[in-house]
Every structure is written in structure tokens, then in C-alpha cells.
Length: 455
Image (cartoon, rainbow, N blue to C red; front, top):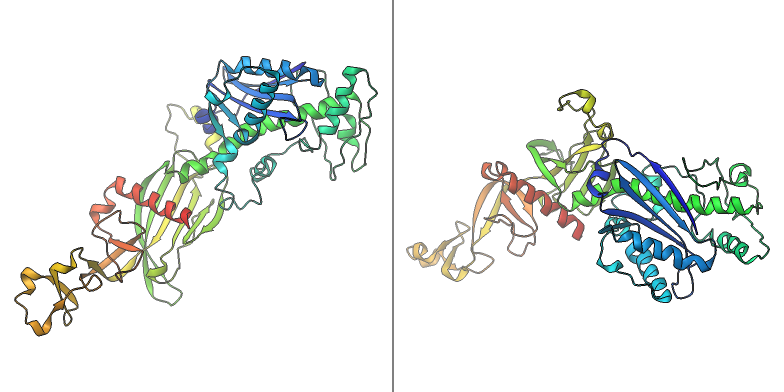
């Protein structure tokens, strides 16, 4: 079994590492000879730990299939010091595969006892929001602008490992590098304690096909791929800020109302809520979810110019705080990682201005007055001439109110108003009592976001 270790210092003030990468958590990723734990094997386990402000990536490499049990045992022994696993699709692949191989070797394991932060699972609902074709790790890294030296997938390298493993049994090897177009210059992971260097063929062969690899070259390719998977996972922690935000981890910092002109040239009004996420976004994005338009960018979004109240749309935008005041004792203490991140989201919600109806719940206790187009309780309407009143129905048992109203898709705030009795969308009046209550503002912002995701 080979063991490689590489250490590096993360960026000062990285809020994502501070939030997720605790001293009791461990990143891990496995490399296998196939997808089936019953027919294939684990040949490498990489993991990352944080100690004294530095991150150490360790890779356990089985030079031949007979060493699989050794790397499994070494990894499981290490896990006894930790309580949280962090992976990319580890709940779907890595953990079940490890459990299967441990069962094969009759190695006791308690993998199900750990807390597990699966980055892939956390981001599974946000592919559309981030405008991504898929949620593969390399796709997410490209979204964040993370450059890789590794050019291959785990599947590409299976044949390389199988050829390398023949060395342990004294067989002849025939290393052929998997063909990939548009190769770029590659550098080796820094400060590695192993003598495995990046193959010259990988660095220099351009677009040549079937380049021959030495055993050292093959070893370096296998090592590099797993190393960058682990390091990339750590960098993907920043994407969890999106799932945290849409999960309600924000506060409304302020609000305002603003007028705007509709396409028809009439004047409309909108409520603008300024939200501060508890973790900043690493990158701007734009998407549309039903009636919710979301834009996280460096610039303030344009005003919403949507249509009628039945199609009230909210627009969210975010702007980057280009310069934040220094709030520490010394400006030298400002955390540099925070600069350039998206710290503010603006939620725009169209107001309905006009007249809506409040429907009384007990219509049998009311009379409807057609001339006044309103309902009165029978204790009062009994004094109205019979010719000017009828028994109210559920659809006619209402009173009317004029004002400015906000849409809601379940009755969170009362009284709830509608245009018609069977409308699914209700409205509540925009009042000072509502806007002066931060709890109400947070509750409403979360309600609108949740509704948009349900469409």
C-alpha cells in the first residue's frame, strides 16, 4: 500500500470552510474498478482533514487488488476520530460501495452511524437555478471557475490501474494513456511526499493518441485524479450557500415600496425586500421559477414590469457589496475571502392596488345585499327590506376593501382577501404592522421562495 500526503493552507477567512469543515469532519472520495461492489474493488481512498489551520489530503493506494483490505482497514480505523463525513454523492455511491467491500472482507464497519453531508444531494434541486446541464463534480467546478490539471474521469483510468496492478504479480504491463482531446499543460499537486511525478506524456503529448505510459506515469495519473476530486470537493462547499439561502437562512435587513410602469403604460407598485444571506454567494446567477425571477449579480436588477394582479410576479436580484466598511479593530483584520462575494439579495414583489373581497366564513349567518354588493350579518340585515336582501352563499358572503395588497399562496396573514371566492391565491393588506415586524417579513419572503419551488 502506498500512502501520499499533501498539505496546504486554505484562503484566510473562507466562510464555507469555517461553517462546514469542522475539526470533527472528514472529506473522502474513493476510486474503484467499476460500479458494482460485488464484482469490483476499491483501489484508492482519498480523504482530507483540517488541523491547526491547514488542510491535509491523504491518499491510500492499493498497488494490487490484494491490498484492498489494507486500505479499507486503515480508513475505517481513522474514521473513529470523526463524526461527520463530507462527500460528493457519497450516500449514493461511495458509502454503499465501501459497505459492500467491507462485507466481502468481513471487516466490521459503522459507516451508517456518521452524520453525512453529501454536497451532490444538497445541490440536487438547484440545477435549474444555476443553469447547469448536469451536477457532475467537474461541471460544478467549471461553474466556479476552478481549473483542473486532471483530464480524465474515474472510468477512464480503470484500465490504467488494472495494468498497473499486474506489476505486483510480475506480469508484463502495457500502459496506454486514455485518449482525450485538447490536453493542456498540467502541473503536479504541490508538496507531495511521494516520488510519483506527473507523466511527461500527460504534460507534453498534445493531441497524440495512445501515448505509452511508464508505471510511474500511470501512478501519477491515478493519484492526480483522486487528489483533485478531494480538493475540488472542498472548493464546492461555497455552492452550499445557495441551498442554505433557499432553505431560509437569511434575514430581511430593510424594505421599501417603489412605483413602476407596466407594459400597458399604467402605474404599478412593488414591495422590495432586501435580504442578507447568512453565507454569501460565490457567483452570480439568473433563473426563472414560475412567477419568481431570480438574479444574483454585481448590479441592482431592473424594476419588475409584469402584468396584472392575477399574475403578480416577484423579482429577486442580488448585488455585490463592492466596498464594505472595516468593522474590526484594524483594517488588517478584514477577512480577504469575503471580498467579491454576493452579500445581498433583493426580492421584488408586485403589489395589487385596488379593491378586493373578504369572504366571511359562516355564510348561513349572512344576507347578501345586491344593491350594495356586500353581505351583512343577519343580526343587522334583519332590518333591511326583504326585497333588497337574499340569503348569502359562500360566493356572495363578502365585504370589500380598497388598498395595496400582497399575494400569498396559503393563508399566512389575515384577514385574507380574494378577487373571487374560488381563487387559489389570496391577498393581505400591506400595513405598517406588517412591515415593522421583521419576523413577518422573513416569514413572507420564505413563503414566496417556497411557493416558487413547488411549481
